Image 1 (cartoon, one colour):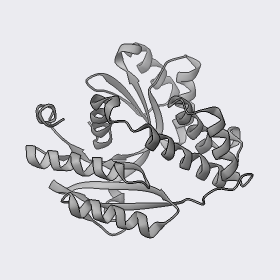
Image 2: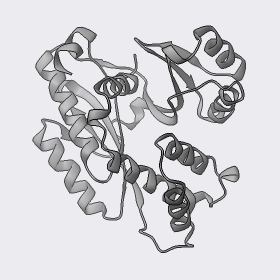
Image 3: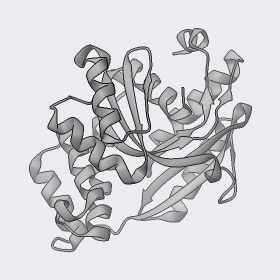
Length: 249
């Protein structure tokens, strides 16, 4: 299982008690604004905005909030100018971390991330130190109890997906960046319900973390990074054995 998939599964199992609705809305709001600023306010001509709107709807974000964020991005309404930055570093055990940030204050964001790395036993690296270990891919996730495996495989294959991975309770469809929209549309056309569809950074290889204390450190570091105000997404290349995960999550 890829590091991204492992982290996604851990968050899924931890459940809604760990989900901070305000933080989710803040992340989506920033993404809507930046997507609209970079590609315009028409989702039919702006795939990134189209995906941001889909994410907002999946989280039951109010329509007025979505429209207001888009207008701020296009300049129709006054709004904060967020910039995108990427930070790279290592968690305990040599686990590579790739952190996407949207912020109106780069110095504050950098200081917050550096503080978390230092406090949680990680090390912040130079630009490019781990980015080469990840590939930008499409990811579509289905809950096993909601869909038929054969149907998922059939549609994914016909639509040109790269792979379908079966986890403990989910199916993950991996796609090339260029085919993500068409594969997603194929599932929409078949009315197959997915729980997540996004462009993500997938690790080329994973680092096995077999030490329980070290595994706990990795997860605490990632939790702390995700809690930072300006952080949008965190990607990692770790793999923790399930028997250890059960004891520490």
